[in-house]
Image (tube, rainbow, N blue to C red; front, side, top):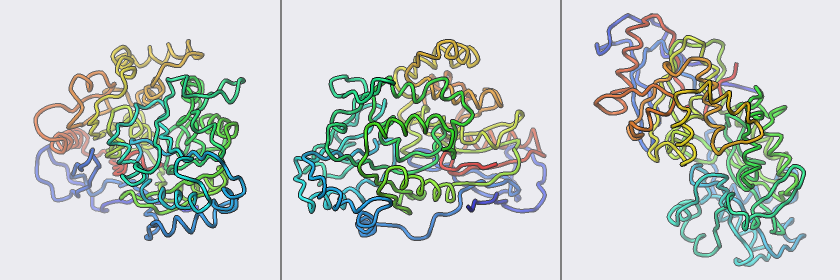
Length: 456
């Protein structure tokens, strides 16, 4: 299996200069920030940790049709549907927080169902929101396109509404979207990317946590689950998040998987459809190769991002960028992260949690360890952030945003880089100051933030 190797901008020795001085031994890098970018000048001796480029070719609707005819581990989608003659078909898609190219692959899937004799009114598209907020009508159109929205029923999963759920297991208790579970043919879609808890997204995660009840989501994200060192990016075997999600997906039953891998331009570079587990595992192998950056050391200064829109729409999601940088950090490191957070901190529950414990991470961990049987909504994100805090301390997590309010920055368990100027200007000033204080510091940059797996 191939990985990218660290890229150095230059082998020239760095000259020591003060903050704000012009330097001719610097190079410019771009970091995603919301719908824009932040450009920073970094030492040309910095190590650029970025994924291997995905294959040059990108796939469109014709490639999707071909994949549906020759899937992995199953007969073609049309054959499966004709053999089953289902009265109802459910297709689950990711919500607006994921940049999944639904508009490319949904039409060929729907065309295949039509060819197999399934009428439009027998098909429902379920948005797998997990515990995220419901989609707006405008977001439904963004997700599936105007034509699909006009022809097919599109509904959101509601984990907090028992009337929309059906029990599929009593031990452990699991309830699932009734729209999905009661369909006679179930299709899961989504994309595969590094996931900082579950190893990789996609596959079984399209069911759990996307379509399950609150208690199951809380078990998936529970204290004991995330206390495992195996709950991390790039690892499936022995990963408790992966095991819980896989168990739930098997219980519910998935008839067909359609997952893709995408490049940084959100274009499809890999298609993995067919058997839920076989197709997903093949996709994970490719994503490991395309998104893995091999590292053999830790760095004094690490610069990263929240991944840009739509991922960095909240600080809650920005935590992924913090955690994915962890392998590059030693106990004396400083982490500088830029993230838009244009929808602010996160859910009301997450805001309340950070108001109470943002300044007391050790007390927070002690409390959730004591109450391991009870999982509060969104506590898992702060638990994961505490891994970074435990390594380098809040004072060494420098946070730059153009959009997150000062009030929320103050409770986010980071050190805000405040002051006048744009995110670019403030991030540059912070980096220059760090370099002036530590002229011999080793520097690494992770331009793609949470989309890059650092592999030791």
